[in-house]
Length: 393
Image 1 (spheres, one colour):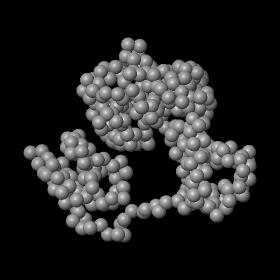
Image 2 (cartoon, helix red, strand yellow):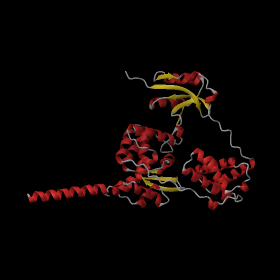
Image 3 (cartoon, rainbow, N blue to C red):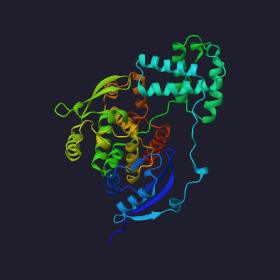
Image 4 (cartoon, rainbow, N blue to C red):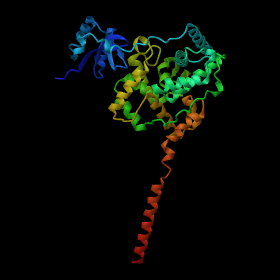
């Protein structure tokens, strides 16, 4: 008799609420039961399904799974959570009403400059944190030293990355352009040089093994499309069905990074997978959809990709963007010109695409290591000497 899967019930704070966590290993049937309730949701941060805690919800969960799994209840389920385990609650930034109004005007200014919603949100967060830090100083009196002090006292202790530092400087530069009365010198605000790490690249065999290890048809279709078309994860999530032209074997990416459209190739080998996926799941608007026709979450894609890599026994740190890097590198190794790769990837600058020349192995393998050359020379000398000795005898 097949052993039933295990489900562990825990009680914990989640999203500032007393929650019931339902933890089990990946199981599509158990997941479908959770989704059917309409009350149980997936938490990427907790790596578990959850709902608000109550006696009624606890009974509901036990009733749903009692014949499908072995339920293990932790002792904490029946104990009220201690106040010491309550989550950190932010009390809100302490900013004067006058400064709050300036920040609102700054956001409106950014919208007028047609910045993306994510960039506006990032810049708003940086400026609001900065205003809280310098709240006692009149804005007109702010100097470059105040900007530096904020970095020293806030960024350094929080161990923010170089890219975050660069974003903050960009936010400040735009603020100085918007509010010209400060004593901050825009030209003196310099961004640190960005780190130039070589991207992780999978071999073609590793990509195929990941796809083989992805048993769920929807998940396999998502990963195959990201790799075969070199898509960013945001482009995959926002891709609408009407922008996939099977007859012309073309996908149109609308409003991608930098507010640009571009066309990419729809791989011949992907079309059977696409048809199978569409006939099985029948998405309405987007290529891949979550609950009730909504966009799929990037956290879900990262989670099942990680799971597939574990099954495929690939030790490299693999993300959806790794598939894009691999796509570009494999194109280069197959002799595709960098200019075409730049167009397919949607890069604004050729320098961005040039990084793949450092990881493409086709030309690198043709370069002989000095050690190999030295050993060949020694072996050749030995062969010549051996031949001479045999001739003399």
